[in-house]
Image 1 (cartoon, rainbow, N blue to C red):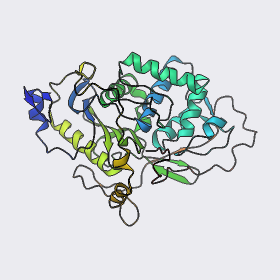
Image 2 (tube, rainbow, N blue to C red):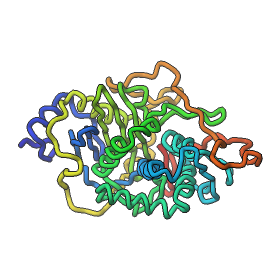
Image 3 (cartoon, rainbow, N blue to C red):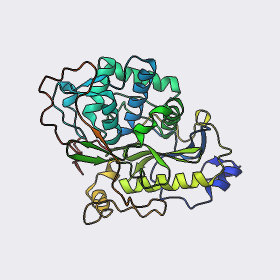
Image 4 (cartoon, one colour):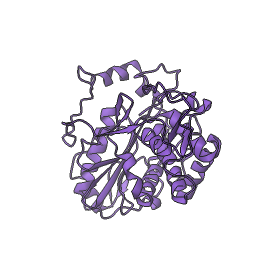
Length: 367
């Protein structure tokens, strides 16, 4: 048995992981072979972390289970309540009483990470946000996500909203294995709402060979999180990256992990469900706000953008998008049983983005 970054790995795994140099790692991560469920690499996989918008992966899982049961349909209505409209950005800003299809709601949740749509969907699917959250926690328990608890469907932070890289890997495995028919929701390059086009904040989509999902998340206390999947041939890998210091860093760490994973044979390593707990036993949730949202940190992230404000990725595994992103249209209307004569769909708003930086006392959320 050899040791790699202070934890045991098999000799075969160590050989596989040595194929490329390590990326600049910032926080916990897991590299998973989705088909076999085997863990190819991991670090601090049991450290509790704020999921931010990665929460919406469980939101999607609960919805997929409901779709599978036949209790709801892709054209089932999602209505915007006052409670949903009150959610902070990122959000769509549709007026109270607006109706969209569940299908469009899922596309918006996965690409734009709109908190108001996540809440409205939870209410529409389960009757109330609290009932939906109870389903989220029940599914987490059933899947064996032993260090995960949810308090909402969107990921805005609270002390009782936490997960781990290990638990997220279990969720990713369930999503991809149980519901391959819905994988397309996670690989959309951009959505158009009226005249506004928003690209997926997972910058590996369209830029990393084989990238096909899944979700980003950010709050000051968690840093920049990313679940990234890619498929080459018949093999799908997932990189769960938590606590990166920027959008660029999380994308490049994930790209490096996935590249190493595809060069490894995929043998050895425990199944994600059987990964043995390690590290200090603690129920504390890591909070890296001072590292992420200080003025110095924000200034450093600004250096990762060009004069037009576009992110500069230098990883050799990530190539520029030399074409226009493939856009999927979303919007209001079209839901089963809606009454189109009512004039509540006029003046479709432009999505409201999360501010680039909020003072430490504020609550911020986004991709």
